[in-house]
Image (cartoon, rainbow over all chains, first blue to last red; front, side, top):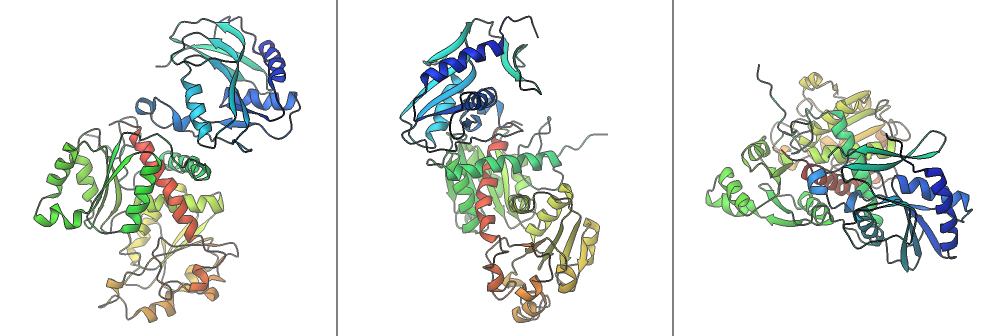
Length: 168
Length: 320
């Protein structure tokens, strides 16, 4: 924990405004678990969007499976709408190396061929390792590689950012 | 004293081989069942394949023939994007006199990553696990009368799917328990997962009294064995047991222990009927029961693929 000047709640307000502007009638929100899932759930409600949002688990498309193996706890992708021909707006908390987004796009394509895929995040952190960028980010920051930036959600649903040393 | 480590687990207690359910902690069983749930949903996708084991070579070593089991492992491996090599080993090198360990050494030299082993001798997969290279993983697909752990796990997945919780269940296993590696694996798994009661049902020759030592209630009377059960696992009556002193005839067996609609009516109204297949209609199970609404025999087959995907991906992700 550090005195990081990233107010997740304030950034969320900016994200919600941007997402509202990006929406088309045939757009579906898809959050990347777990932080992006919380955001998509809240956006779906706050923006009063029809239907349900989707969530994506990247477990089956991770590129570090050989070194990390299967997680003990498995969460599932849930896409309660037809992907084929749909405009997908991916939501995540932090965009960093881009590897999570690569895996999420692969997972998405296992369900069909969307018309387009865009990405909106709370925080764009430097350190990209793939040619991926966000259509919208509420903040841009730079952090040392050894640090992990993660979104947390408390019992009341309030969001906050935590910085920790990477466990490996 | 030197601590004897379970050969299936690494130093961190993670699964590296699946040889037997006996000795596996509850958390490992639950992890496999939960992961299988994730893989089950892969069947609903347009692309029924995930890249977790891309570039890995999985060898099916069936020293004992079983087209069906081999096929389910093959489908599971292919849905994980592994390369699968089926060796008709019963008719090849061993027939020429090569020893099991020489066969393994040769296949290891071909850069295998995983062996799926079925063997007529109990313990053969342990021998393979002990002598293969450290990066190679072994799954027991049935060894002698000893164990058939993936069948046991898919049975547990099926029970959890239909009954949610294990703790209040009475499970009746009916038929040739003494020769059944499926029954043994089921009994270990059910015990670890904490069911209320396990019954072993069948004639004295096939359901010996010493099953009691495994915590099983032995019932030689079918009515007593079935009454009030939540889950009925019928075992296949193997034709080779029919001759000799074990059993008088298939007809006699069906009369006493075959599962008919009348006998099934003694169980709980919501009881499920399971069978590892292939079924012998009119020998251990009546067609009306096998095809009836309480039968979950076909879901078992579907779950079996997801469970085998889970086991393969978990062990492949853990290193010795």
